[in-house]
Image (tube, rainbow, N blue to C red):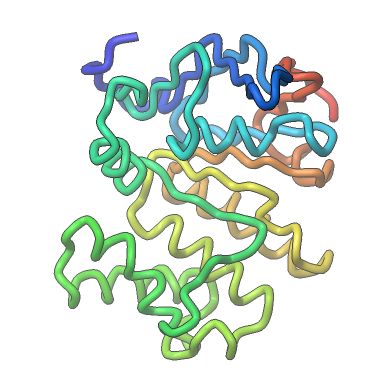
Length: 237
């Protein structure tokens, strides 16, 4: 892979090649990922499923540049992560990736609007413009009347919709979700999933979601199953 390559629309936004991850602790060697390879095209949605402890979150953290790999390469939006400095990886995360976790991770002392503004402010967007873009997206996710509320004043579903808005406000090439509705009841989970898929169609952002929810996985374009560190593609979950 060429670290200086650029991807055109419709081409791969992410490419994992022969990724391996092992831990050596106390003389014990644990292989978490073994020769994992896959690609993701722009606008494509992908579910990664597997038993607890199968390495799904580890793979997502490696893809997002939050963890190091033992072997292989990961390319995000034309940049090979292992060839970048920490600061450069941070810029790739800010400009090319969005993150949604099982717990919303909103900053409790800031309003919904301020939380959604954060990724834009980090990249240097002027405050007024960041607030305008954040307000538009909060309106889009049904929180237009809740922009001045802090996370403690929002319901669980509202907090997670705010987290979705924060992940998408920079219009990233790809959003990585780690059990993004794991803390929600069935009705709120269905609402958040529907919202993510709708925004995927509108904005063209790719999604990789780690999930135990087979109903969600069935709605994605592709499903990969991680078992004993090996990734396999399947047409059925």
